[in-house]
Image (cartoon, chains in turn orange, yellow):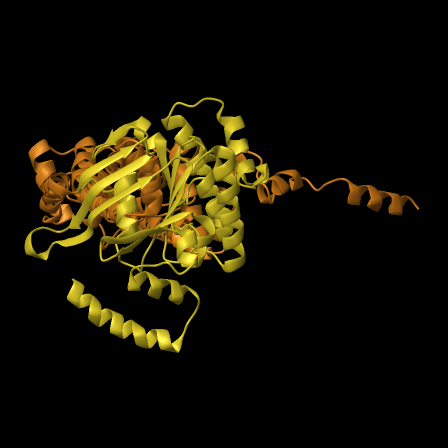
Length: 314
Length: 267
């Protein structure tokens, strides 16, 4: 008898989280917030169907966690040298071994996540808005503005990214901030081209004509109507280009033009490990693996995001 | 004084020898409360005329006056409020990333009209959509529902003139009748004036009292629908168009060739 009562109460009481689920899948959204949340929820469901993209997202989440909680995750101070324990192979004390100055490689790789994330976020925050602005303005206004802005982007596109970044760093001097500026300068033209192409498709559509007939100003049309249509492809492009940014940053670090020696930047670590590679394999291997893993993760995540955000899939 | 007065309107695309005159010296006057139908085959310039009148194409010459306001190539916000337009394709005229609520709130924000909550619910109600549609996205709506939203958006700023660019040709037949009846009711209750562009004479004779027939950028003739139904057409092209709207006819297809030949002489 008691068991049947128990099952009854179980059936009546809603499952935990059922309220939120119902709210997210309700046929009729009751507010703008709910409508937006539903849209995000269905996008998330579509994203989860792509296992590789989920793997990519997990690695990125791990990267962010490692960067945020680096002092707690790391076993040693990444900068403290101990020449007595230099070039130790991986062990229980030093999980990834130690480098030529006796620094713990595991801790350095963990702290390196901070630098990588810092570069990636800063470059994206600089590049995406600039590219979006220039691209949408060129596409919307057309004519002389379009010609001027696009020739400017052509000039930047004419140089290979790393070579131009090298030239900028050579002119500005080595350092993390200058590396960020150099990478940004070589990265924005792609965004501008993309945003312009999207704008050209959107601007002749009826819904833009409709809002113009309502008296919407050009700024309003660009900001409220064209930019939202460009956002998905810009976000996807930003995610995919993060892999390239990481590689370029590592390349600059490798050449000694990015982050400077004591700081645990993956490219610089790879570079210093290169000299010891034949005898002490772990020095180059772990930073190299970190670079590969993270840039691969951004690529996989970007691919999954494209499937979700592309309006043609709706 | 007529509400809409179009005089000697010319619109051309391109320049020099290759220029195409899409609208060539067309003059139309429309009284307040009237439904004026503009008919003609695809590419005759009827939509181009409408877009020039609406203010979407600034490259025109001639004179256009609406409600006493002389229209220039650039419009003021108040002039935009005077005339609104409903587009042919309800799948293309609603922004895919805005909710219905956002679509209807925007014109209110532009024209600084208050009480947006009440007005949005009212506007939806007026076109026969209940409040449950308010926070949906256009892709969750059917074609007929989308066109109703487009009509609600046009009417929310309380215009005096509604420009209809084949508003039902993208809808299936049963929905067409619903939307046409809705437009008819709204015209009465909101005291609107319609300029109705269509290639479908059956729809136009249902909606309008007076029609203008366009071909190759020119206004061939104007007449009342009664005269058209009584067979009082003066131009052979109008008669041809009228007979074509009755359905496919083998004999008609044969006469069409004859008509094309005789027309080249006119041009």
